[in-house]
Image 1 (tube, one colour):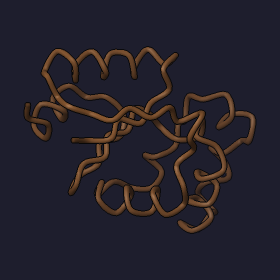
Image 2 (image 1 turned 60 degrees about the vertical axis):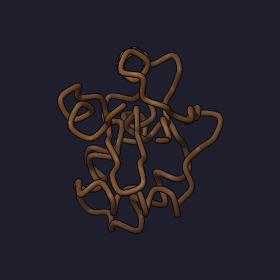
Image 3 (image 1 turned 135 degrees about the horizontal axis):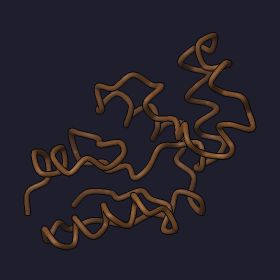
Image 4 (image 1 turned 90 degrees about the horizontal axis):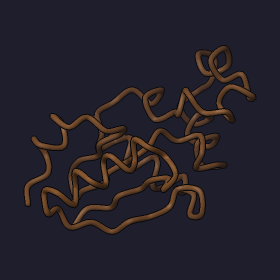
Length: 118
């Protein structure tokens, strides 16, 4: 069973949830706003994802914009970025799917289809 970390009001998260349901994928749901990912979780997920850390930021979010992170991220260390992500779930790109040996960030149907089997 995978962890499905989402924000229920997010339309992309709703599409991803529908895809999981339609494909009979078992998941444990977690509201990213109510239960913010910890520094340890984010560090582990980043390691499993194979993605640049920048991809974990919700760049279209209001908090990202109000903190002016577009101009600040390039000069931050990975440790600083992870610590910042751990402060508020709304900074984290969603949905996020965490499996035993993979992590998917955002919703791309083709990636879901490759890594998630009913």
